[in-house]
Amino acid sequence: MEENKPILWNRNFIQCCISYIFMSFAFYMLMPTIPVYLVEVLNIEEAQVGIILSSYTIGLMIMRPFSGYLADSFSRKPLYFFSFLAFAIMFCGYIFATTIIAFMAVRLLQGVFMGLTSVAGNTIAIDVIPSQRRGEGMGYYGFMLNISMSLAPLLAVYLYDFHGFHPVVYGGMILAMTGVITVSMIKYPKREKAKRPSLSLDRFFLKNAIPSAISYMLCAIPYGMIVSFVVLYGKDIEISTPGYFFIYMSVGLGMARLISGKLVDRGKIHIVSVISQIILTITFAAFAIFHTKIAFFSAAFMIGVGFGISVPAFQCLFVNVAPNNMRGTATSTFLTSFDVGVGIGMLSAGFISSHYNSAMIYIAGAGSCFLSLLVYIYFVRSSYEKNKLKD
Image (cartoon, rainbow, N blue to C red; front, side):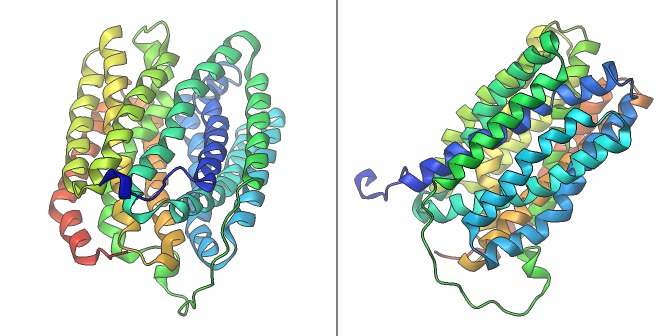
């Protein structure tokens, strides 16, 4: 049976993975260092840090629905190339931004271009993955993100501690530009343009995936809390090397994704999704309660496992209810729901930390994961089975 499977690691898929790792590496170099830079160097209050970070998500949310439409209507490779180039150029803005408004403007614009870049790149990857190995392929594609998450924060925190914030920005910009070069090497096959119906809500947001989008958004809220405030949280509870959190998390992510994708392809999509949400609910609660170094990094690993299991499963929930000529819209809806959750997580984490102790951030995160689980059990499964399409 294994010998009859279509080839997954073709030239195009490999180039998609390489370009994605450069994009995500550049992105994750900024995530743990910007909050610390804003607080320690620019003396900005933590509540305002959440607002600044969320402006990136606002940019993503503005562009994502339109990017799905663009990816479905125009040539995807040029769209990917030029949006990636604009994303890379926006790193220059961090060198000159020294006020809240300036930082928000740079984050907003980079979010806009990131929204277009990620949708185009993900859609191209989905196109070149054989449908019989879609879950597995998405797992490997997402694993590129895990590699970035393990190395980028570690490198960024090291550069920041010894050289300051600007070298972090320069490093991210160089990596992003390298990613632009790899995009140009993708030999994306030409496809016949399908006739599109008149404009409707489904051109920008996949209606069949609304229950999945709500569940995924709730699941993404604690992720926004993690990437924006976990280093500050680690310092609050006196963890000497909080930046290593991302290494443990990425190990869990990588291990889980490589397994969960294959389980999804074997028809276990609902089992995989429910297990991931149970793991996240329990782990975030423990993360808030236990403050030892062992607990901190054990939670990081298990949070990685939870998200690593969930991502390939959730992406298939969106893609499998969309016809081929709406894969861009499906990808856009999938990523938009995640962006909204991350943005809510960043904003709420800043608010909670300024009014309560920082552990309450992750109590709220556990509650959000539990709500996600309830939505999945009562709404997502039945909706998916009703709207699922055959390739």
